[in-house]
Image 1 (spheres, rainbow, N blue to C red):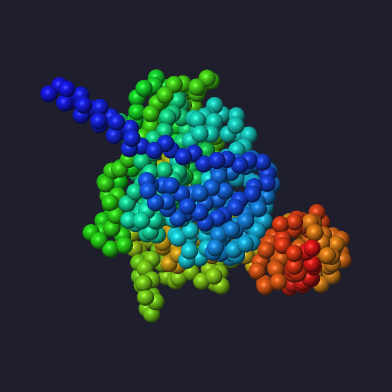
Image 2 (image 1 turned 135 degrees about the vertical axis):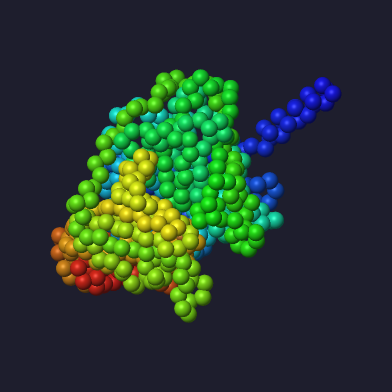
Length: 562
Ligand code: C2O
Ligand code: CU
Ligand code: CU
């Protein structure tokens, strides 16, 4: 009996070790120039046949980008996918033309080069495709990545910040695999994944550990907690640090949201604990709490508790952080009295007559790329009040700004949400309001988006857009006569220069097309004077098109690449 028990115990311990995979930690990129190649590929995610995936410099997901506040960052987004896409910098405050929303479509084979000055606070942001009606498909394949912003204020605090050691990114998703190990693009998968790893485990040092948690799921919310019900401390919300760590045992994280938490593992070497989703308590109105016996929303993880990550506590590092700070920053929230206007938005379940399948709506209409719902005067401070008359809750996200929640279901925001946010959950039959200032970037042509961050709902049209109007903060002077430019040398082999008749002129947008009209380069507000590296182009004739900043009129020139 004893022997059998021992054998059984050994088997259990063998299988329980064998069932885990080591958590992948995404690679990092830092500096001011970031080369991101989006490509179709495949990955060994489950034993046996590989899964067709997409990735960014990787075979699933993409690198974590480190930005320093105040730096100007330059992105080379090379779309090597077989499809058009976009790449959106979720949470970043930047010009709309650089935002990577549904309007900044990058055709296959094209390099898009947005750049902007990082003004966001230290925090955890992310990037992902935003092609209208394709966001769910493209995120499901694995396209996306984290952004970590550093600044002096955060750097002065005694916080863990050794990436992959005591500062660990956790990208929470779920996926559905078919019997050939291929992804099925569905709102809810049957298998939880962290950083693209199924059944992950990871070793953390016996000290204070920081987790940067992103809900990158298509629809599911995760009610986070640890299997021993230990307290963790929320130190940051979407847009950066809170005033002070907020001790909690559960945190309900919705699609698109981020939190940073500190977990104290000091003195726990040799122990293990599970990070779990305690989703059994979620209501039918909360994503992941909705139970469907069958159909496209049925899934194994609906309204149950399930493991996300098995943590093994190992040895302490040298110079460990072993205490949780008592204070972090002073969040100076926007006073509600400073608001210039209030906008009332609605979320509803109602279908639109004549549009089959229209389910969830913002302002009783479906998204239309050519319709601006709002014009926001530059520097306006606005209260957005969102009333959900429907039977389901939705994570509402707005581009351009970080906001402060004013009230949620009639109450002041909870401490962990009293800082800066860019996603807020609007529960069923509830009203949520937030305040934001729309500064820096006016552009009457390119809108910013707001939408439900459940990608399925967004793709179905639960999205709207606004332009920020007013005299654009001139990043670039106007091209007074776009016709008056020349390109040289011509023919050219490596670097093409553009000469403006008026030497003070800059360009609003430059596009380069090949002989058959394929877009090769998309250059918002480019620095034309330093020339354009076209060494990767194959020989042939190309067209270069400049757009005028004020009139948006265009002029073209041809050049020959040798
Ligand atoms: Cu994370 Cu408009 O998106
Ligand atoms: Cu966004
Ligand atoms: Cu929704």
